[in-house]
Image (cartoon, rainbow, N blue to C red):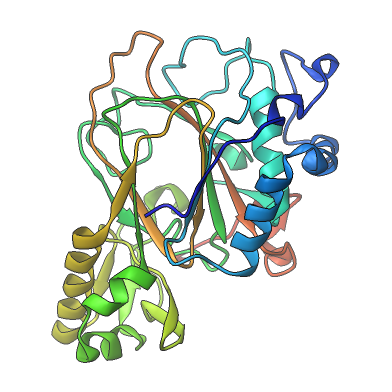
Length: 316
């Protein structure tokens, strides 16, 4: 289950009211520096929970912080485009927490590399395996499983919730005991490929990544890279092991219906995540999350990054 629920006591004072503005450039490094400075304004319990989560990954792979401030909200947008009428309270809140864990980054194909992305249901993508879907469950996956510089953490801040939409989470710490020794042995071998998301391919399709293992690291406490939709085994035994893992993930996952002011932090090396299906109304009150990605360091992606936007090319 999610590690803990934290009720901040003074988080509404995270930024001075005078800092609110209808149009903040949260891509700008000065805004990120402002967020970094405001980390001390987070309640001590929140700072300690984030420090512990970063230093000693919890078996659940998730941390839920409740009661964060998100500011005044307009109607839920009908596309992921940031509303022009919104103040930047939620963006500063999200980046403040992100800086406690590492370095926030964007990925060029993800809305042009925006550091903070609005996740809202759209009619055009309602039945696809994307974050703006709603009619179908979002299958369990490691965020950007195919990417050499995938995020260390995924942060989801809820601006508006939907009681029917459950964010799902499954940790390798809880899945591992359900797998046979033979399955685990295969999952540790580089016998799996993940299809590159088409948004990264500039019009090309059906490009598979290099052979990689699903599990890595210490046998008793491994990390995991898994995508139920895009990953395949290179041979029959590998595919069978992948399917066994998928069944185990489905059997022991947990779910949380995010509410306004909730922030879910997912350890991308420990847990896979997904989402249940739900029925948006498209009336301005629909579920609205903001998302950001965090890496441990900016050094590894230096040759494939401009500022904080990673622009790795694939399949060339």
